[in-house]
Image 1 (cartoon, rainbow, N blue to C red):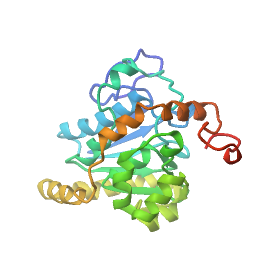
Image 2: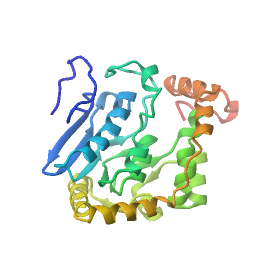
Image 3: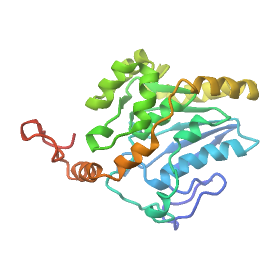
Image 4: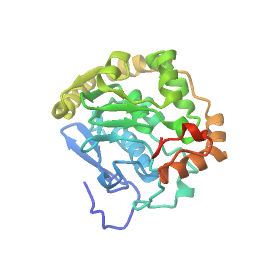
Length: 275
């Protein structure tokens, strides 16, 4: 079920995810959620993040759905939040949304039913966390991966806790502290994703993986998933909240929007354009 972008914003209900920029389609018992906001390169608004979280909850409440696949459009999977702050899809104000834990990360991590990421292109910020916490991430050979939060003045303790467990301390330190971009073959070699296919085959492969996952015994799958996820340390949410309320993200977001280096960067280290 979809709704036109011109329709007044409304909260999630059934297969409607609360925003015209997320589309849920049913492929038999497999739900496919497509992030489709091309004019902002799929940057996620709070309503979109909440819609992604709702999609996972909707999956687990629906007897006729067995698994969920997240994907994007064009050459972008999910690049993280929209730092420009545009809210053209809001069905409530931003302040009200931020009173809740709107992001889908813990919902994916704790989902009894399988969640798969079909990483069709640029994957960074919250998109990378969604891919990491999925049961399986299938990547296009043209996909790229990045965790640029430190460059925005954000201490993302989710990444700091979970990425070292996934790819090792040295590699995680390199990614998190430099904000470097890695390509799909590197992501595969490092264990950031486990499958890589040609660009046109990403979604079909992800759907096939979702079917394979859904054939497992539900109780057995939940027990195995819980044990696997014990390997991820719990993030320090209080420290991350303190970081988000500090002055650094304010300057980091402003610099991103104005396409410049933040003021904390020494003059001789600044670059043209955003970091």
